[in-house]
Image 1 (cartoon, rainbow, N blue to C red):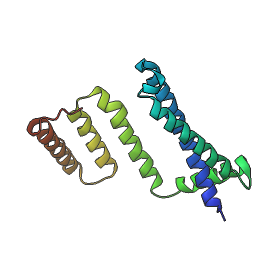
Image 2 (image 1 turned 90 degrees about the vertical axis):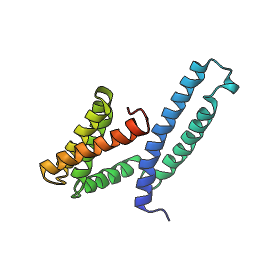
Image 3 (image 1 turned 90 degrees about the horizontal axis):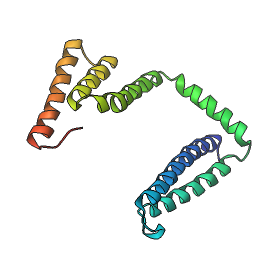
Length: 161
């Protein structure tokens, strides 16, 4: 017998998988048109087939998750579950940590050199987590970023972003 927890998780995961399959399908159609190759020889054919297969299975999971209550029941269960998660003690720390990582990846990295973006990220994350005293955080951040730069950029000659 399927539990409420399983139905809720199936409902939420099917929505995520539907969005992912649509993105894969749209991307593969872009590849198909951009490659100017025949349909059967295009590099976008396999992603298109996989995206459509994932879409079909995701829709089947979505429909299956709607048994015993339909969309209103799953939405209510999901809202209650998210409220429970939001009330958890570590939820705030997790969300802010993820926001700091997103800031690093999408704001700092595109506009600053690797070493500067990474230094700002490490100082910000360690300060937010209160990992140590400010001067230890500063020394640790400079040391780690400098060591990564030395090993990869200088010794291994790997270009950093």
